[in-house]
Image 1 (cartoon, rainbow, N blue to C red):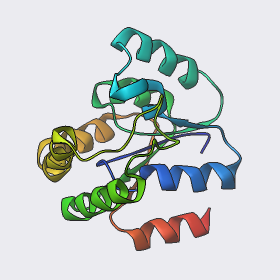
Image 2 (image 1 turned 30 degrees about the vertical axis):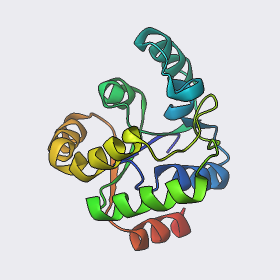
Image 3 (image 1 turned 180 degrees about the vertical axis):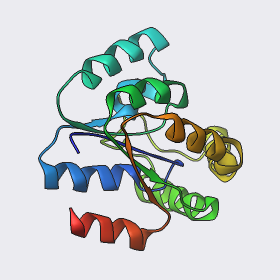
Length: 169
């Protein structure tokens, strides 16, 4: 386990798990959101993001958390382990609301640029996308993981399984 992807629905706990795992393994931690977002929720171009991501993927060890679904096939070519947090949508929605309240008016450290958490139409659209994430993406994720060669897949479906996994690392 030298190159680890942590994937799953938004607000499933990917970043929290990635921070703990990176500290335990002493691996560099890469947040896709730090590569993707610029100030005021403007995002990098695909070309810029792909260049930054490729630079990280070519390093010998890392933990990368995040989705950016269009890049998952590329990331799977570089990783040796995928941890998929396949949590229920209701759990992720509640976690997103909690995170929004907790960070309201602030920019989180795992997001690139200065992007204040705020309650606006984009926040509602984000929560809507979390609710429908599994319905729209779960099967595609499973299909991509099944096709990935020489990749160990660790499927975790709740916080108890995450805690057990982290305690065993």
